[in-house]
Length: 341
Image (cartoon, rainbow, N blue to C red; front, side):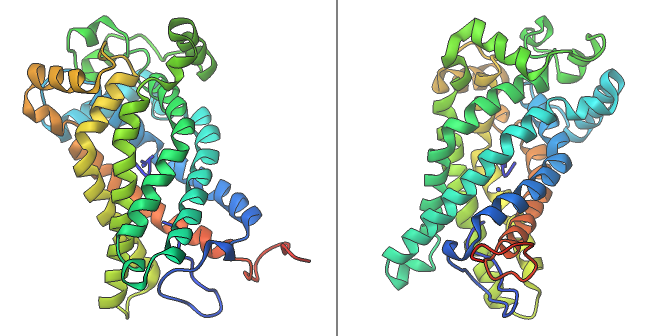
């Protein structure tokens, strides 16, 4: 998400009265305020980052061998704008926002609860190690998988329409060439896409690619959170005079680069299986066919835009989440209403 990103920390709220450097327990959070502030903050994040999600998806389903990233990205942006104007960069944003925010808040709640539970049960030598956020991130991704997969399947199909099943794509045309062959924007809504999935594949079509989703996002979430927590603590130790918010942003950027690089090949396979650009639903067969047809460099396809986009997205996600935890603390004096009157 985070990417979702993103594929996007939980024990890092800052005490408003007495700032702290590290973590606080999840029990110190006001859950109603967490949901309320989270809805506003992550709605804002979605509007800021959604265009990058569309561009990444279109580039990843391109069947041609790699071309220079900046030139391809520029041509893609030009053709998306030429075909659909600004709305082309926000195709499917309403459904994505409405469905993603509850899933994101559920994920973060699961991560926070599991991280605190693990910290209370392990010894001091493990409490500050990357192992706790690694396990908590993996658990949160596994628990919320059933929510994320249908969202991904529908949103990605909306994002690449009308290119996803176009004959040009079967022949290996680029996203730019595919757009050039279309006439006007796609009229498919999220309900129409969902109906099409239902008619073609039944209920199981909404969970197409669940195995590759788990194979991608469980390690990606684990790596992101472990990298974020470890980097943040290291920066807090070595740069004590720097503001905590700046350190959180730096840690988020670092985590974005690390997780994006290590999981990019699986990300490509996931997108191609879920959008049916590849006919097979086998992870291994899709990966082998991709390498045979497009070469080993295909494993890095979309990596440059993914890193280019994930760094600011991870920085923004880190900042917003730290802000969310500070705002939703039970003792926050800025709450409109208290939890225990």
